[in-house]
Length: 107
Image 1 (cartoon, rainbow, N blue to C red):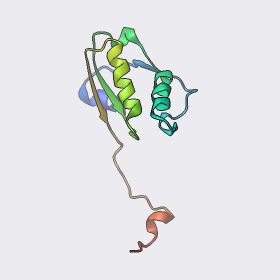
Image 2 (cartoon, rainbow, N blue to C red):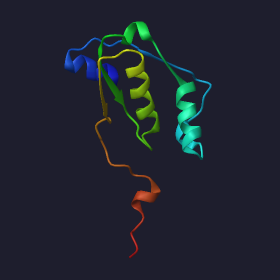
Image 3 (cartoon, helix red, strand yellow):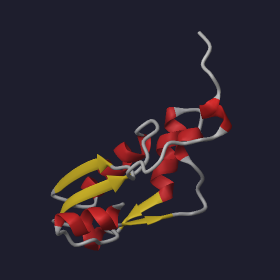
Image 4 (cartoon, rainbow, N blue to C red):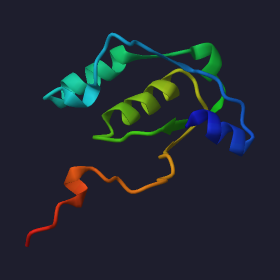
């Protein structure tokens, strides 16, 4: 997603966040405080890349917004001048044809 966005927009793609793969999904935690804490552990900003830059964050998933909000805060604290965030999805090429989508609806 980010690579395609950067190419289409004529922007340089730089990886400014390091993700800790040992931290699971943040939205599953039952408390908001726990979700916020997991975001801080899951991602580490690269200050040398972010300092003084205008940043575009591209995400392909939004459940509660906890991760996105936390990332924007981290990026700002790392010295970014501006942070723009957006959510993208791949183009739908075909309708799903699983058994559940073929079942007749009951009213």
